[in-house]
Length: 439
Image (cartoon, rainbow, N blue to C red; front, side):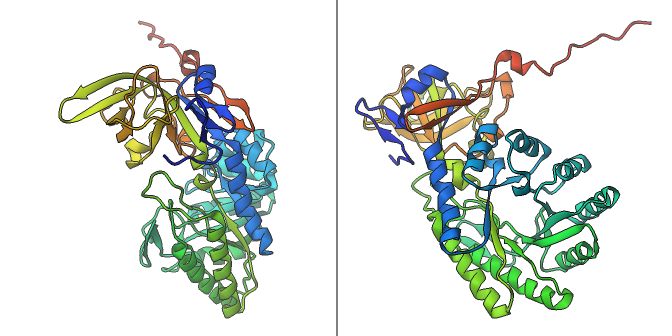
Protein backbone atom coordinates (compact mmCIF):
# COMPACT_ATOMS: atom_id res chain seq x y z
CA UNK A 1 0.00 0.00 0.00
CA UNK A 2 1.29 3.44 -0.94
CA UNK A 3 0.04 6.28 1.25
CA UNK A 4 0.00 9.84 -0.06
CA UNK A 5 0.50 13.14 1.75
CA UNK A 6 -0.90 13.06 5.27
CA UNK A 7 -2.62 9.69 4.80
CA UNK A 8 -1.91 7.05 7.45
CA UNK A 9 -3.51 4.08 9.17
CA UNK A 10 -4.82 4.84 12.67
CA UNK A 11 -4.85 2.51 15.70
CA UNK A 12 -8.21 1.09 14.66
CA UNK A 13 -6.93 0.13 11.24
CA UNK A 14 -8.85 2.95 9.58
CA UNK A 15 -7.49 5.14 6.80
CA UNK A 16 -6.87 8.68 8.00
CA UNK A 17 -6.32 11.75 5.80
CA UNK A 18 -5.58 15.24 7.04
CA UNK A 19 -6.05 14.04 10.61
CA UNK A 20 -9.59 12.84 9.86
CA UNK A 21 -10.88 9.27 9.99
CA UNK A 22 -12.19 8.51 6.50
CA UNK A 23 -14.75 6.03 7.84
CA UNK A 24 -16.21 8.80 9.98
CA UNK A 25 -16.16 11.16 6.98
CA UNK A 26 -18.12 8.59 4.97
CA UNK A 27 -20.64 8.37 7.80
CA UNK A 28 -20.95 12.14 8.10
CA UNK A 29 -21.20 13.08 4.43
CA UNK A 30 -22.27 9.82 2.79
CA UNK A 31 -20.71 8.09 -0.19
CA UNK A 32 -19.46 8.47 -2.84
CA UNK A 33 -17.35 11.25 -1.39
CA UNK A 34 -14.32 13.14 -2.73
CA UNK A 35 -11.80 13.90 0.04
CA UNK A 36 -8.92 16.34 -0.59
CA UNK A 37 -5.71 16.54 1.44
CA UNK A 38 -5.20 20.32 1.64
CA UNK A 39 -1.75 20.05 3.19
CA UNK A 40 -0.50 17.99 0.25
CA UNK A 41 -1.86 20.55 -2.24
CA UNK A 42 -0.06 23.32 -0.35
CA UNK A 43 3.16 21.30 -0.29
CA UNK A 44 3.09 20.75 -4.05
CA UNK A 45 2.27 24.39 -4.81
CA UNK A 46 5.13 25.60 -2.64
CA UNK A 47 7.56 23.08 -4.12
CA UNK A 48 7.05 24.49 -7.61
CA UNK A 49 6.98 28.12 -6.53
CA UNK A 50 9.88 27.97 -4.07
CA UNK A 51 12.23 26.36 -6.59
CA UNK A 52 11.91 29.36 -8.91
CA UNK A 53 12.38 31.75 -6.00
CA UNK A 54 15.40 29.87 -4.65
CA UNK A 55 17.10 30.05 -8.05
CA UNK A 56 16.17 33.72 -8.51
CA UNK A 57 14.13 33.19 -11.68
CA UNK A 58 11.17 35.43 -12.55
CA UNK A 59 8.22 33.11 -13.01
CA UNK A 60 4.54 32.35 -12.76
CA UNK A 61 3.23 28.99 -11.58
CA UNK A 62 -0.33 28.82 -12.88
CA UNK A 63 -2.68 26.13 -11.61
CA UNK A 64 -4.36 24.40 -14.57
CA UNK A 65 -7.86 24.56 -13.15
CA UNK A 66 -9.34 22.07 -15.64
CA UNK A 67 -7.96 19.40 -13.27
CA UNK A 68 -10.34 20.48 -10.49
CA UNK A 69 -12.13 23.81 -10.39
CA UNK A 70 -14.35 24.96 -7.54
CA UNK A 71 -14.56 28.25 -5.67
CA UNK A 72 -12.83 26.79 -2.59
CA UNK A 73 -10.07 25.21 -4.67
CA UNK A 74 -9.30 28.48 -6.45
CA UNK A 75 -9.34 30.35 -3.15
CA UNK A 76 -6.76 27.87 -1.84
CA UNK A 77 -4.61 28.41 -4.93
CA UNK A 78 -4.91 32.18 -4.47
CA UNK A 79 -3.84 31.77 -0.84
CA UNK A 80 -0.70 29.98 -2.02
CA UNK A 81 0.16 32.85 -4.38
CA UNK A 82 -0.18 30.95 -7.66
CA UNK A 83 -1.56 32.18 -10.96
CA UNK A 84 -4.47 30.47 -12.70
CA UNK A 85 -5.05 28.82 -16.06
CA UNK A 86 -8.65 28.65 -17.32
CA UNK A 87 -9.95 27.11 -20.55
CA UNK A 88 -13.60 28.19 -20.70
CA UNK A 89 -16.03 30.90 -19.74
CA UNK A 90 -17.26 28.65 -16.92
CA UNK A 91 -13.79 28.28 -15.44
CA UNK A 92 -13.23 32.01 -15.78
CA UNK A 93 -16.58 32.72 -14.10
CA UNK A 94 -15.61 30.40 -11.22
CA UNK A 95 -12.35 32.31 -10.84
CA UNK A 96 -14.19 35.63 -10.73
CA UNK A 97 -16.60 34.29 -8.10
CA UNK A 98 -13.58 33.08 -6.10
CA UNK A 99 -12.27 36.67 -6.23
CA UNK A 100 -9.11 35.47 -7.94
CA UNK A 101 -6.75 38.30 -8.97
CA UNK A 102 -7.65 38.90 -12.61
CA UNK A 103 -4.13 39.98 -13.55
CA UNK A 104 -2.94 36.46 -12.69
CA UNK A 105 -5.46 34.63 -14.89
CA UNK A 106 -4.40 33.07 -18.21
CA UNK A 107 -7.08 31.99 -20.71
CA UNK A 108 -6.37 28.90 -22.85
CA UNK A 109 -8.46 27.00 -25.38
CA UNK A 110 -8.55 26.06 -29.06
CA UNK A 111 -12.05 27.41 -29.80
CA UNK A 112 -12.79 30.35 -27.54
CA UNK A 113 -16.12 31.91 -28.47
CA UNK A 114 -16.59 35.62 -29.10
CA UNK A 115 -18.51 35.83 -25.82
CA UNK A 116 -15.68 34.14 -23.92
CA UNK A 117 -13.11 36.53 -25.40
CA UNK A 118 -15.34 39.50 -24.56
CA UNK A 119 -15.69 38.17 -21.02
CA UNK A 120 -11.91 37.94 -20.68
CA UNK A 121 -11.54 41.48 -22.00
CA UNK A 122 -14.30 42.77 -19.73
CA UNK A 123 -12.46 41.47 -16.68
CA UNK A 124 -9.05 42.64 -17.98
CA UNK A 125 -7.42 39.29 -17.28
CA UNK A 126 -3.64 39.03 -17.34
CA UNK A 127 -3.08 37.02 -20.48
CA UNK A 128 -4.85 35.25 -23.35
CA UNK A 129 -3.04 32.28 -24.89
CA UNK A 130 -3.89 32.61 -28.58
CA UNK A 131 -4.29 29.24 -30.24
CA UNK A 132 -5.07 29.81 -33.93
CA UNK A 133 -5.49 32.36 -36.72
CA UNK A 134 -9.26 32.64 -36.27
CA UNK A 135 -8.79 33.62 -32.63
CA UNK A 136 -5.93 35.96 -33.49
CA UNK A 137 -8.06 37.91 -35.97
CA UNK A 138 -11.15 37.87 -33.73
CA UNK A 139 -9.21 39.14 -30.73
CA UNK A 140 -7.59 41.91 -32.77
CA UNK A 141 -11.01 42.95 -34.08
CA UNK A 142 -12.60 42.96 -30.63
CA UNK A 143 -9.74 44.96 -29.14
CA UNK A 144 -9.89 47.46 -32.01
CA UNK A 145 -13.64 47.95 -31.53
CA UNK A 146 -13.14 48.45 -27.80
CA UNK A 147 -9.88 50.41 -28.11
CA UNK A 148 -8.43 48.00 -25.55
CA UNK A 149 -5.01 46.39 -25.35
CA UNK A 150 -4.45 42.85 -24.13
CA UNK A 151 -1.36 40.75 -23.41
CA UNK A 152 -1.08 37.47 -25.27
CA UNK A 153 1.07 34.38 -25.63
CA UNK A 154 1.16 32.46 -28.90
CA UNK A 155 0.70 28.73 -28.40
CA UNK A 156 3.07 26.74 -30.60
CA UNK A 157 3.61 23.06 -31.28
CA UNK A 158 7.38 22.51 -31.16
CA UNK A 159 7.36 19.15 -32.90
CA UNK A 160 7.86 17.09 -29.76
CA UNK A 161 5.48 14.41 -28.57
CA UNK A 162 5.89 13.18 -25.03
CA UNK A 163 4.52 9.80 -23.97
CA UNK A 164 6.01 9.49 -20.51
CA UNK A 165 9.32 7.94 -21.56
CA UNK A 166 9.07 8.27 -25.34
CA UNK A 167 10.05 11.51 -27.07
CA UNK A 168 9.57 11.78 -30.82
CA UNK A 169 11.13 14.89 -32.33
CA UNK A 170 8.93 14.88 -35.43
CA UNK A 171 5.70 14.19 -33.56
CA UNK A 172 2.87 16.40 -32.39
CA UNK A 173 2.70 18.55 -35.52
CA UNK A 174 -0.67 16.90 -36.09
CA UNK A 175 -2.47 18.56 -33.18
CA UNK A 176 -5.67 20.51 -32.74
CA UNK A 177 -3.73 23.00 -30.60
CA UNK A 178 -1.46 25.87 -31.51
CA UNK A 179 0.60 27.26 -34.37
CA UNK A 180 3.11 24.85 -35.87
CA UNK A 181 6.71 25.86 -35.29
CA UNK A 182 8.04 23.87 -38.25
CA UNK A 183 5.88 24.94 -41.20
CA UNK A 184 5.92 28.72 -40.76
CA UNK A 185 2.49 29.13 -39.14
CA UNK A 186 3.94 30.36 -35.87
CA UNK A 187 6.08 32.95 -37.63
CA UNK A 188 3.11 34.21 -39.63
CA UNK A 189 1.04 34.46 -36.45
CA UNK A 190 3.80 36.40 -34.74
CA UNK A 191 4.00 38.86 -37.64
CA UNK A 192 0.24 39.45 -37.51
CA UNK A 193 0.27 39.93 -33.74
CA UNK A 194 3.25 42.30 -33.82
CA UNK A 195 1.51 44.47 -36.43
CA UNK A 196 -1.49 44.96 -34.14
CA UNK A 197 -1.63 48.08 -31.99
CA UNK A 198 -3.70 46.21 -29.44
CA UNK A 199 -1.97 42.86 -28.98
CA UNK A 200 0.99 42.86 -26.60
CA UNK A 201 2.94 39.69 -27.42
CA UNK A 202 4.61 38.53 -24.21
CA UNK A 203 6.11 35.40 -25.73
CA UNK A 204 5.38 31.78 -26.58
CA UNK A 205 3.59 28.87 -24.96
CA UNK A 206 3.80 25.12 -25.52
CA UNK A 207 2.44 21.98 -23.92
CA UNK A 208 3.98 18.65 -24.87
CA UNK A 209 1.75 16.11 -23.10
CA UNK A 210 0.58 14.68 -19.80
CA UNK A 211 1.80 12.24 -17.16
CA UNK A 212 5.44 12.95 -18.07
CA UNK A 213 8.03 11.30 -15.83
CA UNK A 214 11.23 12.72 -17.32
CA UNK A 215 12.58 16.17 -18.16
CA UNK A 216 13.88 15.34 -21.65
CA UNK A 217 10.77 16.49 -23.48
CA UNK A 218 10.67 19.84 -21.69
CA UNK A 219 14.36 20.40 -22.41
CA UNK A 220 13.98 19.60 -26.11
CA UNK A 221 10.91 21.83 -26.39
CA UNK A 222 12.69 24.75 -24.69
CA UNK A 223 15.69 24.33 -26.97
CA UNK A 224 13.64 24.34 -30.17
CA UNK A 225 11.51 27.31 -29.12
CA UNK A 226 14.46 29.40 -27.98
CA UNK A 227 16.27 28.77 -31.26
CA UNK A 228 13.20 30.08 -33.08
CA UNK A 229 13.01 33.03 -30.69
CA UNK A 230 16.61 33.92 -31.53
CA UNK A 231 15.73 33.87 -35.22
CA UNK A 232 12.74 36.13 -34.64
CA UNK A 233 14.77 38.41 -32.41
CA UNK A 234 17.08 39.04 -35.34
CA UNK A 235 14.38 39.10 -38.01
CA UNK A 236 11.64 41.12 -36.28
CA UNK A 237 13.55 42.70 -33.35
CA UNK A 238 11.14 40.78 -31.13
CA UNK A 239 12.37 40.12 -27.60
CA UNK A 240 10.01 37.75 -25.75
CA UNK A 241 9.60 38.38 -22.05
CA UNK A 242 7.83 35.05 -21.31
CA UNK A 243 8.42 31.40 -22.16
CA UNK A 244 5.59 29.17 -20.96
CA UNK A 245 6.58 25.48 -20.99
CA UNK A 246 3.15 24.23 -19.93
CA UNK A 247 2.46 21.36 -17.58
CA UNK A 248 2.03 17.60 -17.78
CA UNK A 249 4.16 16.68 -14.77
CA UNK A 250 3.32 13.11 -13.81
CA UNK A 251 2.01 11.65 -10.55
CA UNK A 252 2.00 8.15 -9.12
CA UNK A 253 -1.23 6.22 -9.67
CA UNK A 254 0.23 2.72 -9.37
CA UNK A 255 3.59 1.00 -8.91
CA UNK A 256 4.18 1.40 -12.65
CA UNK A 257 4.50 5.17 -12.26
CA UNK A 258 7.73 6.88 -11.18
CA UNK A 259 7.27 10.68 -11.16
CA UNK A 260 10.00 13.18 -10.30
CA UNK A 261 9.87 15.72 -7.52
CA UNK A 262 8.42 19.07 -8.68
CA UNK A 263 11.71 20.82 -7.95
CA UNK A 264 13.58 18.55 -10.38
CA UNK A 265 11.29 19.41 -13.30
CA UNK A 266 11.72 23.11 -12.56
CA UNK A 267 15.50 22.98 -12.07
CA UNK A 268 16.08 21.13 -15.35
CA UNK A 269 13.89 23.62 -17.24
CA UNK A 270 15.69 26.59 -15.73
CA UNK A 271 19.12 25.16 -16.48
CA UNK A 272 18.24 24.54 -20.12
CA UNK A 273 16.70 27.98 -20.64
CA UNK A 274 19.72 29.63 -19.01
CA UNK A 275 22.17 27.73 -21.19
CA UNK A 276 20.26 28.35 -24.41
CA UNK A 277 19.64 32.06 -23.81
CA UNK A 278 23.35 32.56 -23.08
CA UNK A 279 24.32 30.58 -26.18
CA UNK A 280 21.88 32.50 -28.35
CA UNK A 281 22.57 35.91 -26.76
CA UNK A 282 18.96 36.32 -25.68
CA UNK A 283 17.70 37.97 -22.49
CA UNK A 284 16.49 35.47 -19.89
CA UNK A 285 12.68 35.36 -20.12
CA UNK A 286 10.24 34.74 -17.31
CA UNK A 287 9.45 31.04 -17.15
CA UNK A 288 5.80 30.10 -16.70
CA UNK A 289 4.48 26.60 -16.02
CA UNK A 290 1.01 25.13 -15.59
CA UNK A 291 0.78 22.22 -13.13
CA UNK A 292 -2.69 20.79 -12.68
CA UNK A 293 -2.77 17.06 -12.02
CA UNK A 294 0.56 17.28 -10.16
CA UNK A 295 -0.99 19.70 -7.63
CA UNK A 296 -4.25 17.90 -6.90
CA UNK A 297 -4.16 14.41 -8.42
CA UNK A 298 -2.79 12.38 -5.52
CA UNK A 299 -4.31 14.77 -2.97
CA UNK A 300 -7.76 13.39 -3.78
CA UNK A 301 -9.30 10.14 -2.53
CA UNK A 302 -12.78 8.88 -3.34
CA UNK A 303 -14.72 6.93 -0.72
CA UNK A 304 -17.37 4.40 -1.79
CA UNK A 305 -19.72 2.05 0.02
CA UNK A 306 -19.55 -1.54 -1.18
CA UNK A 307 -22.84 -3.06 -2.32
CA UNK A 308 -23.55 -6.18 -4.34
CA UNK A 309 -21.06 -8.79 -5.52
CA UNK A 310 -21.01 -11.46 -8.21
CA UNK A 311 -18.70 -14.46 -8.29
CA UNK A 312 -18.13 -15.94 -11.74
CA UNK A 313 -16.46 -19.32 -11.01
CA UNK A 314 -12.97 -19.72 -12.45
CA UNK A 315 -13.15 -16.24 -14.04
CA UNK A 316 -13.47 -13.34 -11.59
CA UNK A 317 -15.34 -11.83 -8.68
CA UNK A 318 -17.10 -8.50 -9.16
CA UNK A 319 -17.73 -6.14 -6.27
CA UNK A 320 -19.99 -3.15 -6.95
CA UNK A 321 -19.75 0.27 -5.33
CA UNK A 322 -22.23 3.13 -5.12
CA UNK A 323 -20.42 5.26 -7.70
CA UNK A 324 -18.46 4.62 -10.87
CA UNK A 325 -18.13 6.32 -14.23
CA UNK A 326 -20.34 9.18 -13.08
CA UNK A 327 -17.75 10.31 -10.53
CA UNK A 328 -14.64 8.89 -12.27
CA UNK A 329 -14.93 8.39 -16.01
CA UNK A 330 -11.16 8.07 -16.56
CA UNK A 331 -11.00 4.25 -16.41
CA UNK A 332 -13.71 4.00 -19.09
CA UNK A 333 -12.30 6.87 -21.12
CA UNK A 334 -8.55 6.32 -20.85
CA UNK A 335 -8.22 2.85 -19.32
CA UNK A 336 -6.77 4.68 -16.31
CA UNK A 337 -5.37 2.56 -13.48
CA UNK A 338 -5.92 3.08 -9.76
CA UNK A 339 -5.09 1.50 -6.41
CA UNK A 340 -7.51 1.17 -3.48
CA UNK A 341 -7.90 -0.19 0.05
CA UNK A 342 -10.74 -0.87 2.46
CA UNK A 343 -10.77 2.33 4.50
CA UNK A 344 -12.22 0.55 7.56
CA UNK A 345 -9.84 -2.48 7.36
CA UNK A 346 -6.72 -0.93 5.91
CA UNK A 347 -4.30 -3.10 7.91
CA UNK A 348 -5.77 -6.43 6.82
CA UNK A 349 -3.92 -8.55 4.29
CA UNK A 350 -5.51 -9.20 0.90
CA UNK A 351 -7.18 -12.61 0.51
CA UNK A 352 -8.49 -12.41 -3.03
CA UNK A 353 -8.45 -10.40 -6.23
CA UNK A 354 -11.68 -8.65 -7.12
CA UNK A 355 -12.78 -6.27 -9.85
CA UNK A 356 -14.51 -3.07 -8.77
CA UNK A 357 -17.65 -2.34 -10.76
CA UNK A 358 -19.59 0.90 -10.85
CA UNK A 359 -23.36 1.06 -10.56
CA UNK A 360 -24.08 2.55 -14.00
CA UNK A 361 -26.03 0.54 -16.56
CA UNK A 362 -22.93 0.16 -18.73
CA UNK A 363 -20.63 -2.85 -19.09
CA UNK A 364 -17.65 -0.52 -19.35
CA UNK A 365 -18.33 0.99 -15.94
CA UNK A 366 -15.38 -0.66 -14.21
CA UNK A 367 -13.15 1.29 -11.84
CA UNK A 368 -10.39 -1.24 -11.06
CA UNK A 369 -9.63 -4.69 -12.44
CA UNK A 370 -8.05 -7.42 -10.27
CA UNK A 371 -7.64 -5.45 -7.06
CA UNK A 372 -6.16 -7.37 -4.09
CA UNK A 373 -8.53 -6.99 -1.10
CA UNK A 374 -9.53 -8.76 2.12
CA UNK A 375 -12.97 -10.40 1.99
CA UNK A 376 -15.12 -7.34 1.33
CA UNK A 377 -18.81 -6.91 2.08
CA UNK A 378 -21.61 -4.40 2.44
CA UNK A 379 -20.25 -2.94 5.68
CA UNK A 380 -16.99 -1.88 4.06
CA UNK A 381 -15.80 1.45 2.66
CA UNK A 382 -13.53 1.40 -0.38
CA UNK A 383 -10.98 4.22 -0.68
CA UNK A 384 -9.67 4.80 -4.21
CA UNK A 385 -6.48 6.85 -4.26
CA UNK A 386 -5.33 9.63 -6.62
CA UNK A 387 -8.74 10.75 -7.88
CA UNK A 388 -8.13 14.45 -7.26
CA UNK A 389 -7.56 15.39 -10.91
CA UNK A 390 -10.30 14.96 -13.51
CA UNK A 391 -12.60 13.13 -11.11
CA UNK A 392 -14.99 15.84 -9.98
CA UNK A 393 -14.22 18.03 -12.98
CA UNK A 394 -15.35 15.28 -15.41
CA UNK A 395 -18.22 14.03 -13.23
CA UNK A 396 -21.57 13.59 -14.93
CA UNK A 397 -25.18 12.64 -14.32
CA UNK A 398 -25.40 9.52 -16.46
CA UNK A 399 -28.35 7.36 -15.32
CA UNK A 400 -29.53 10.50 -13.48
CA UNK A 401 -27.05 9.86 -10.68
CA UNK A 402 -26.29 12.96 -8.56
CA UNK A 403 -22.68 14.09 -8.34
CA UNK A 404 -20.90 13.51 -5.00
CA UNK A 405 -19.87 16.20 -2.53
CA UNK A 406 -16.31 17.41 -1.99
CA UNK A 407 -14.69 17.71 1.44
CA UNK A 408 -11.38 19.41 2.27
CA UNK A 409 -9.43 18.03 5.25
CA UNK A 410 -6.50 19.68 7.01
CA UNK A 411 -5.01 19.49 10.51
CA UNK A 412 -7.87 17.45 11.91
CA UNK A 413 -10.62 19.64 10.43
CA UNK A 414 -13.05 18.83 7.64
CA UNK A 415 -14.92 21.32 5.50
CA UNK A 416 -17.65 20.69 2.95
CA UNK A 417 -16.73 22.73 -0.14
CA UNK A 418 -19.18 21.25 -2.67
CA UNK A 419 -22.60 19.97 -1.65
CA UNK A 420 -23.96 16.63 -2.82
CA UNK A 421 -26.41 17.05 -5.67
CA UNK A 422 -30.01 16.16 -4.89
CA UNK A 423 -32.61 14.61 -7.18
CA UNK A 424 -34.22 18.03 -7.28
CA UNK A 425 -30.92 19.48 -8.54
CA UNK A 426 -31.06 17.03 -11.44
CA UNK A 427 -34.40 18.48 -12.54
CA UNK A 428 -33.58 22.13 -11.92
CA UNK A 429 -33.17 22.98 -15.61
CA UNK A 430 -35.87 20.63 -16.93
CA UNK A 431 -39.00 22.10 -18.49
CA UNK A 432 -42.29 20.23 -18.97
CA UNK A 433 -43.46 19.09 -22.38
CA UNK A 434 -46.32 21.17 -23.74
CA UNK A 435 -48.55 19.44 -26.22
CA UNK A 436 -49.25 21.46 -29.35
CA UNK A 437 -52.69 23.02 -29.44
CA UNK A 438 -54.86 21.06 -31.82
CA UNK A 439 -56.39 23.06 -34.67
